[in-house]
Image (cartoon, rainbow, N blue to C red; front, side):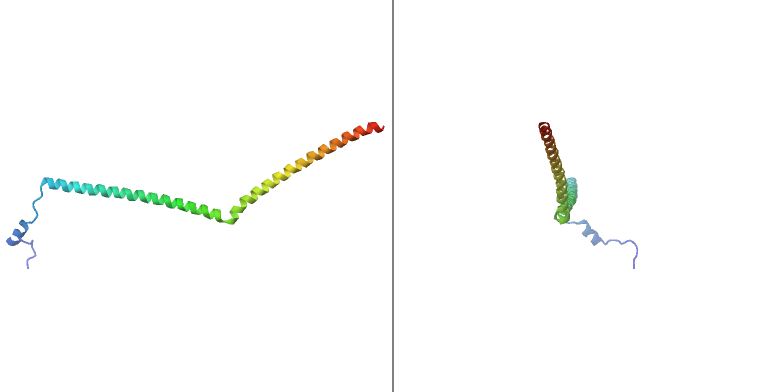
Amino acid sequence: MNFGPKEESPREQEKRGTSAMPPSCPRCELTKTQFSRTIQNYQKAFRKKVEGMKVELKSARNTNDALRRQVKRLKSPGRTLLPGVVIGLVLGALGNAFFRRLRQKKAKEGEGSNDQEQAAVAPASQ
């Protein structure tokens, strides 16, 4: 039992030395780095695209939630009737005040014409 560093046999050294792959040349190494850079650029672009889509999805969800709340508010009967009732009451009160003033003006004009008639009749009877 040998627990020290493993020593390769000459046969293993031959097998390791005669590889089917040719040694790498500087041109191949350049191509490998270009490929790795291209892959990194694609990954970076993909991450940016995914982040943009996440932001867009979040915005769409917020818009969707706002529209759902608006539809829910418009569907509720109490809230849709309330503004109409308030507007009706205000218009009714304004109309009532307008017609009351109009009746008062007509009543005053009627009293004024009766006074003039009585004044004209009074000197004639004397």
